[in-house]
Length: 154
Image 1 (tube, rainbow, N blue to C red):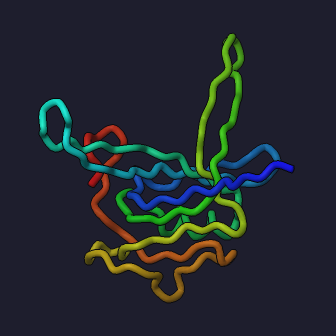
Image 2: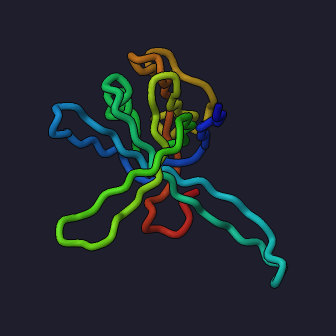
């Protein structure tokens, strides 16, 4: 019998507003780009180095998508809980496969905003009336993040 656990959790800033696409099957998918950062001192130079890592987040849950459309804006501080998933596809006319690793938010996982939507500073915890209908997420957000094309999002 095999045993494993697939759980991903991160806190970071949204690099762009949520993108929602309609599927051929009639459903919807929401895509988020989240930046996390870390600092360390280089062994070679001894100087402080700031590094940003970008993460793709995906959900197919209608109630959660509705909440994200209302609240998921560039720069907001967000906590995401989900599972890692790698997709493989091939574009027409190409000989090699493409891969994308993302965090999939499914029922039982959540997305929660940690800052206020009006930009009046961070205040951890959800605000009343901003929870997703699925119970999978709560919201209360806004911050000063940057887009992936910019150097550091914090």
